[in-house]
Image 1 (cartoon, rainbow, N blue to C red):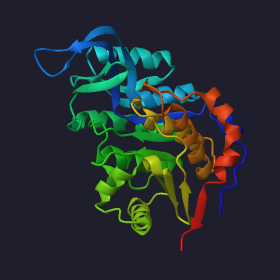
Image 2: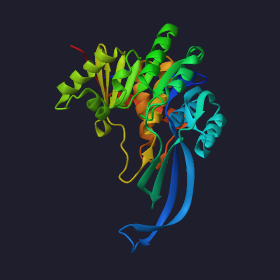
Image 3: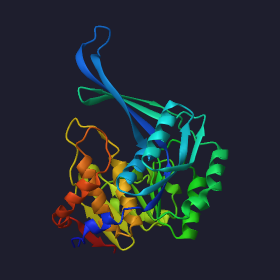
Image 4: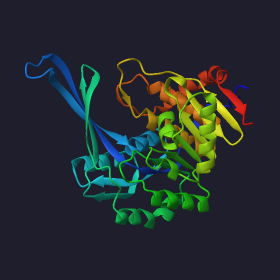
Length: 341
């Protein structure tokens, strides 16, 4: 059957002043823009003229930025380095109104991803970062303030980019504290800790990461459904959302499987970054506002489709999202929900 959709504008109204705790890997994205001039005689590479460069928030910092843009109040738990990128990141998030009292400054360099843009296309990315697990004493520092951080929040989100901040110990303690306090948790995992997110409310990932984490090969729709229910059982969660690129999204719940069509994909040559964070921000804000999960997914898909053909790191636009809300009736007719047999 198709999905019945209520007023999504009402859900967006509920974003305002919701308090969200973001736990994850804080990063900085650096863009160096140039215009191609000729081919080099020294090597088979283009020679370009420098135009400009900019720093933007990435990873869990971009998720924080997206949540602030939606009107939420954000607390952040993470790590930055004692370096220029770390200081810039903290200044920017402070300007966005984020509470950084749980951000630890240490000697690890702030994750910095430098993207070289030539003639409006990305040609190279260089990463400066550590990817080993964070030191145990830093995790203990996180746990010391955890009860206070969770208290007063309307929702918690893990923004895992596999840079070492999120550990099995941190996950289990956060889940237990949220269970005690009755708070919803959304997890955006990478492969390394995918199966450690036991007891979260909702897991959101792409199909490739879920396939690698479970070792299940995608042969047909039956294997996809089997994997989804296998993950539901192993992670003991209420729902799992798997994004499938040009095939749309699929939502697993205890009693239903809902297939969402592709809304809009990126145009060839475009390099939108952070669409994942944009979607996650809308999802966790919707859950914190007590929206039905299927409508939260629909709204997140709309937010992602708005950003798909942009260049650079994207941020959710609440006004644009409101203007898109009237398209949901048409979209809902293409959403198929089937009961679990």
